[in-house]
Picture 1 (cartoon, rainbow, N blue to C red):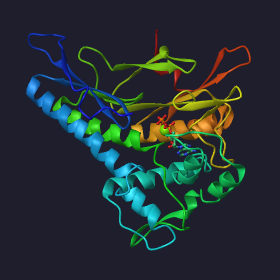
Picture 2 (cartoon, rainbow, N blue to C red; picture 1 turned 90 degrees about the horizontal axis):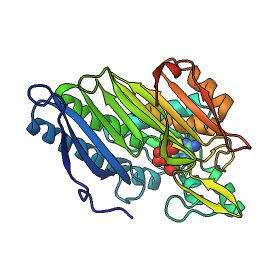
Picture 3 (cartoon, protein in one colour; picture 1 turned 90 degrees about the vertical axis):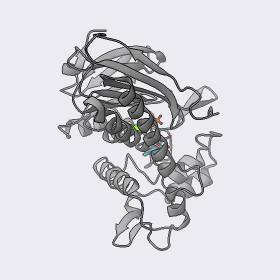
Length: 332
Ligand code: ADP
Ligand code: MG
């Protein structure tokens, strides 16, 4: 259940070089179904507070545009028009779809923004359960990123019944827009929405921001720490985020659109990218691709780094890192 928006509203001032230097102003709120933690470096409280309010509004705006849970959203309308006429979409959604389709193509369909019918067949997020095999096959027929196309008149899902699900990319895009709002103050900020985050610049007195990566076996524990600076983003996809058990088998919300079942080989994937939209989508894509192909796909993109986490039979974690990942790691 989602608390009323603004229920967690609080502003904390973390004074660093209190007298003259900049300080970090923080806000913790609720957005995109999870906790949003925002930090902005500023010399005064009032521009910081205004930027924090604007950043929270950006998160809410992107959630409204991308959600599949509102009949009046553009995403819902596109699904209703599936098999019919194309429809013009707002600029943000246009951008997200272009980006999602690029990741879909480059990941060979491991990431698929038309996964809607499949996610629905598994009952995520409200009532997840094992789907009936006939329903699953019917849903899978409708999942095809190539059936989502842009014409001069707008966007179109080519077959009736097709539906988008932007759950693997929308949060990342929203994080980027919130970071833009905060960066207007001094260019130094951090936005963290449920573990998907973007930074700009650095913490006062430091050369970057330190980011902890969750242990997939025990998400309250951080098992890796990295330092990122400039315009960088980090996102994690894990099998622990939404899952249910049947007869001792764990089923989770990252589905392989080529087979219709939860992707089985990894526990989590963390991706570092120039934008959170890319980090988010590629974390989902690499998770579906698995340790070898996932690592290869990340290595094929010079601006992506990451770590893919597997668990061996003894319960030990096995880490597969891209070549530039180790350079980002800092001592725990
Ligand atoms: P989160 O950060 O919300 O846990 P992820 O970024 O890992 O989520 O994306 C998982 C979500 O994306 C699912 O809840 C579902 O809505 C959607 N999804 C699941 N499988 C895929 C896929 N293969 N490609 C694209 N989206 C997916
Ligand atoms: Mg994702």
